[in-house]
Length: 227
Image 1 (cartoon, rainbow, N blue to C red):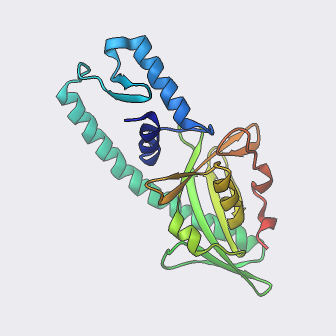
Image 2: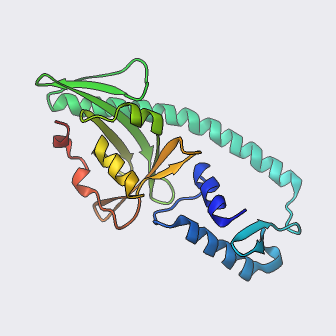
């Protein structure tokens, strides 16, 4: 496969984390270095410029692979259960923040792209909530269905990303900020063009979306944006 296709598939399966604007180039360079340094012990071989395949001489014990697969399946089950709790907790946390600020807010019974409906001063707001724990790479990773985003692309739609680390922070984005960052490729299109992948990092009190050049601290914990 060409290194661009390898990168695309790895991103779609959430196998790699990236904060750069050119993950394909990074993938190409890392595989090339792996082949050069490990030689026959590398799991990859260069087929032709830009294309890589699996090294037929690179093998692992079948028993270890089966054990690993079982461990991955069990981890996925536990992660799904945990994600459900975390997601619902995030929604309740956002409702609480809105109520403290004078909004009449409630969680939708059925999620069709909007989690919370809120009203204030005769204005209606649609709010989608995404919650994530900080991963081992010190990133928060979110996926957003493109079909849902396109369905509610209007001025009263807001996206609240709940960032659960040592403390809880909120990234509050109007829908047009999502679109702007998609256009600027700070937000990636993954999973066969069905989802947006949003990578967020907080460093030294500042928030970055997509890459270290795209600071979005203005939108962190700024509930005044919902108006």
